[in-house]
Image (cartoon, rainbow, N blue to C red):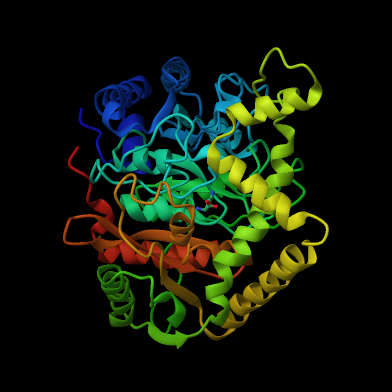
Length: 487
Ligand code: GLN
């Protein structure tokens, strides 16, 4: 049976009506991965044995009439920075090649506990540092819509796997855009939740006060289903919030579009935005208007400081978080070093990728005495201004609508040797992380070369229900999210 493009509930209908088994589902995806992934290179590890074993357990529960989890039969790919017990977790860096974790990350475990099936671990920029997956210490993932283009990053492997139908949903992380950007370049839906909604426990840390794990799926309804499971307080992550988790699926149509005030921040519709992207994103806004929403021009004046603030604060946190990869506690080590200093220098020098070293250098510099106040303290103050800008704007409007990426997917190699150019692709995503508010990215059209374009809906803290509801209604009026690449 051709299971291509099915959403989680569609596949579960087939499973529960016994038209297919969980093992059939897994075999379908394994076959597709074997056929298609050599071109796309979304996966670093394919977990064939684990997937078949989990599927057999689900099938036997169904056969015996026992109850199964909410995600029975749903096949997931996991960004390789989520620790998965006894399954290699590399963070796409040579530093962690062959590393086998002794425990699993909280939100991965929550999904497994609901009978989701892991099909593999996906490629990313090393430790999630990047915007295209080209920084990976292993290989570059290709965009399923055009193999000469990047899928976006850092969670490019996860996004490409969902877009190419090599799984049904995937886990990613968004520290400065890494769920929304690849979702947008690959024509799928992705949610960057409020900071603290999903536990960070068991995920290799990038910038601890920014990191937001979340999900990619084929549509917003699946994002709602999955987020209900991943969200919630975790005693192992003190930054998770102890709020009751709403049933996002139940309230998907709750927001009334009539009279809904949608803010269009003028700073997100100027340079560096490409004209075709602007047109499609504005068309999405107009569609809401035609359904009764009110478009309101707003201003987020410090948007142009976002990249500078982000690329000071994030590397600062990175430089502290990366200290643990010393070849003693974690990671590979080099032999025959005459003393401890050469041991560190050779081990970190040899196995850390160029972008990893660059971030540590920038962060260490920004935190060094003499520069701390000039860079770190100042950037922290501007962080507060940016956060206040969002909360004030969201007093006047219900939600903010903006582009995700200034351009469509670019050629592999085009920005790889120019870090500053690469950092600029984050112009429309980083401020949302600086503030900590939630944002959902979803497809809204294609350019003339048939490359996907996406937009984002940004809400106030913990307003996932609201943005998911608005996004879900958009997908009921449009079919962009149903288009799949010809691969
Ligand atoms: N592109 C951004 C960076 O390189 C975002 C990364 C992320 O969200 N993981 O920092």
